[in-house]
Amino acid sequence: MRKPARKFLAAAGLLACSMTAAVQAEELRLLTWGGYAPQEVIDLFEKETGIDVKVTVSNNEDMISKLRATRGAGFDLAQPSQDRILGAQKNYRIYKPIDMSKIDASRFIPSMLKASEASSKIGDDVYAVPHIWGTSGLIVNQTAGKQEYSFNDLCSDDYAGKVSYRLKRPTLIGFAFAMGEDPFAAYNDRKQYEAILGKVQDKLIECKGNVKAYWSGGDALINLLRSGEVTMAMGWDAGGWKLNQENDKINFVAPSSGALGWIDTFVLPAKGRNDAAAYQWINFVMRPDIAAKITTSAGNFTAAIGAEAYVDAGLRSSYQQSFDQAALDNIKWYPPVPAGLETIEGKVLDRVKAAQ
Image 1 (cartoon, helix red, strand yellow):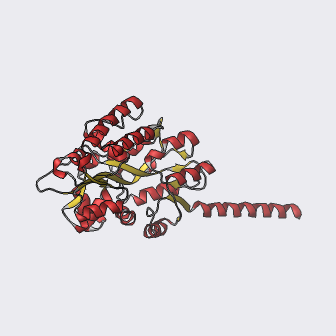
Image 2 (spheres, one colour):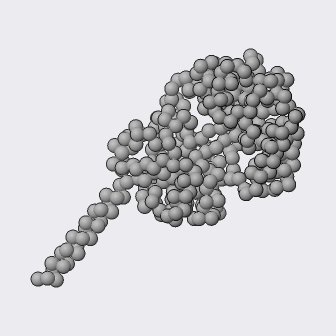
């Protein structure tokens, strides 16, 4: 009698294990940024799919650290910035390729989908698709009749003494593009990159008198523009849109050479156990009505086509003034930064700061 009993217990054990695995399979473990998975969106997804969503809030450094420590285990979906994918994958193998046949590409702004693919591709494998994005460009108290703005306007006599920007990489990159250079194409050629930044350095020193203040925090910049002490600044799109709600003459402008863009992506951790749920979440949040809820929560737009139609009317108007289709297609997306560039940039910025 004992042998049949043992067989029964073993079968029961296997059944219990399979039932436990089935329950576990209906959970999506998401490693993301604050605001990217608001509770309202989670509730709608869980109701529609029956999949429970467990969110861990993180940032780029922490995401990579967590996935590196587990060799890509512990999460089913993560959201690093697009310039943090190739290096981490080549060094630690913490991601798995995206199966693009399971992504509804029709929901993505094509230029952003293409940018994420280009920045995350190894051989024929694509490791990321885009989600949240933002840009830096110009925030301007706009002059009547002026239709086009350039980073070079920060050196114009029209704004003398009323200009602000940060002494950081985006300023160097923005001026380089405005001067007809392509600094991103020179990232892997140290001498060429140094030569480009040398030209930018000379220009920034030459027009240093235009600068009212170098800003270091977003609130400080907004206060300078709000008070009228500054009428043109290099800043983030969200800051410009916030000011536009208060004063319709101030808004974010995509420069003629292109705004500078970042994208936070979706990637599949190498040992995620529920890829199916991950693909369902990606396609769900890229629906324009759902994407708009995430924009409201995060403060930035997503790569979902048509989502602006569902956001607050004031924000929609500000966004549409800043970005038509041509401006969206002209965004210069940040690629991964090779080692050593920070040192070159730091020396240039120090010389600009010290110049009299």
